[in-house]
Amino acid sequence: MKLFKKNQVIIYVIVLMLMTAGYLNYTTNTDKTSSVETSMQIEANDDSQLANIGDATLVNSNDVISENRTDTNQVTNTINESNQMTNNTIMNKELKQNENTTIETSSKQNNNYFTKSKLERDTMYSQMLETYEKVLNSSHSLETQKQAVTQEIQKINETKNSIMICENLIQTKGFENSIIFVNGDSVSVIIEAEEIKQEQVAQIQNIIAREMKVQIENIHIASK
Image (cartoon, rainbow, N blue to C red; front, side, top):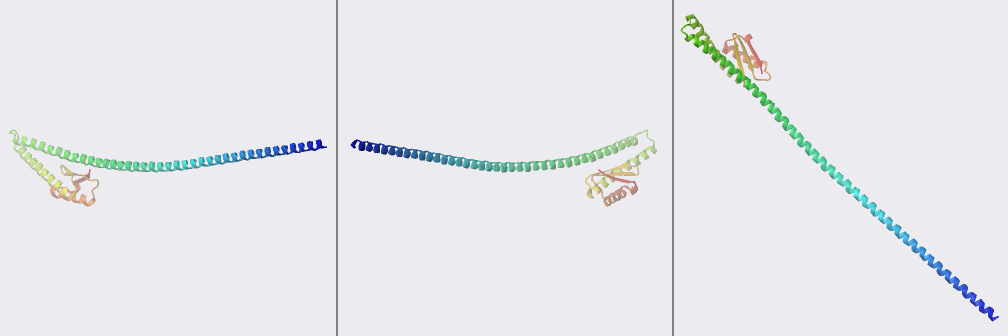
């Protein structure tokens, strides 16, 4: 009987030890699981924060890149506009210079024409007068020849004088350059002008007719 009670006590002790060991094992496993879950949550939160930080950095970087591109585009546009304005200014300046050069060249050509033509005309009259003077001073010339030559010399001098007067009067009408050619009863007048109005033509005709004793229908006016 005593042996039975002793064995029963030992069984109770063993059962209690097993229950205690099982409880401790359960508690330990539970703590480990909780720790693992907590650690995983922390790591997940850390990864999420890192991901968020990375996203925030990328967004800021894009904004900066976008702003930089905008600023660069604005600077580029400003430079292009400035270059365009400079090019336009240079082109306009060159066009004006070309126009002025063209006008100056045309004016010089006209001046050369009138100067050269007057020189040739005066040279022709000088040669004619020189020829007539030789005839007049020649001992072999007849008296009738001398009389005719004298009349021609007088006529040439009168023509030269009339031409000078007419060209000066034409200049007072606003025409800087003009030249007059006389061929018998016909008179040709060349005026430096792009256009001659009808009233100006009438004024020139009146000057020529009065000073050179020429019929108006024999006066021919042209512009150059």
